[in-house]
Length: 168
Picture (cartoon, rainbow, N blue to C red):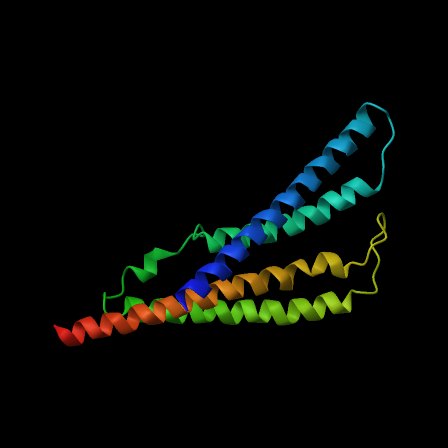
């Protein structure tokens, strides 16, 4: 089970890095192209600005997924550190479960939102807006997978903590 979890998390990490990098490169190219054509050639395309905006949305959400997977998100330890050591594993599990609920809500309603705007077309590039809005459920789903693994790890920590207390 542990090796499967490690493989899944490694694939998620590679996928997140690849997609975030691709969107970041595309966004950078679009901004460069827009600046070049506007200030050097004195004309402007309409689509690079829109594509850069869409890539920024995807990059931001994928970056949040990367930060979560690499444990770079900030925790609010002010309240957590005030709990006695015996309650900290339980509080961590409850917090992880709440995050899983929030990510599930983002996944479900993000999917509904993407479906709702599927017929809407972007003005400059004339692509379906559901491609942009699908960043929400896609990233929420990846983050949910990661948080499920984290929650399972916390439950294991809690059970080992109780075994240690019962043994002493």
